[in-house]
Length: 349
Ligand SMILES: [Zn+2]
View 1: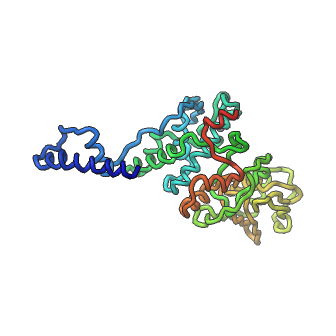
View 2: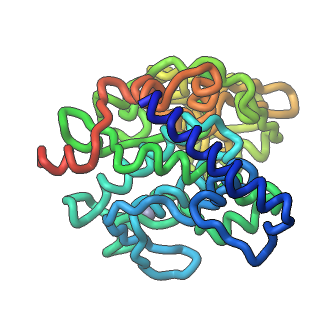
């Protein structure tokens, strides 16, 4: 192979000397002169390579496009590119983008009605919707407009590279496509067992360490509110709760934590709530919170962003930056899984 490559270089060099230099000398390279093949070889490293669309896989996804308000047919790999563009910052390490591509592809194929999936339960007849309800998706056109114009094409090409270099690869467990591939922004140090969040157990959705996330913008956040506001919000969960501002600190108690270190159950007044209930009622970024109540305010200190199940995107980025490849990232966050081609999975069906 190496020798053949060298021969190739020599041929290019000779062609360069024979054609390109004389043309330069006579000033012949202008708009009108095209040397197909040879000329392109010289321009590739200098000019930007524009890859229009990801390679096709000939699998069509029925996506409910929330912007258009209807179901549209979209080619699988094009769909995957749109999910990466919407779900992960393009500045992330390429290995994290590849892991995201595989997670997005696995999710949509597991949901595809034609393949026995349940589809999007919000929009009948659709495999997925383009909203965060399933996986956020954005069109190439819309995405390009949102980026700095000078970087837009390079950004898109980076996404296409992540899609094409993992083309057709999906996550499997026991030779079957993994049915519940979940991911989130920032775990805060430890991911969550799916049982605590979604009420079902998957062997590959267990709690794992997710180090190096400290640089994530939502690694730690604080939410401060008055005691009155706190009580009002608790009442949106249960209007019958008996609670008063006076001595509030003694009326709030975290009862236990989940495997991933999030609040599992909490007693507020005379009622019990889940950490997830409190997360939504109080507008917290995750259920990994602690509470401090002083004479005036209730302060939540929150770790991470999202439900915490499956791959942490910020954790994946940091793993990539530390030299881990996409398969190592996937196998870290989804325990006991394998990566397989779609064709391989179909054979085992
Ligand atoms: Zn949906």
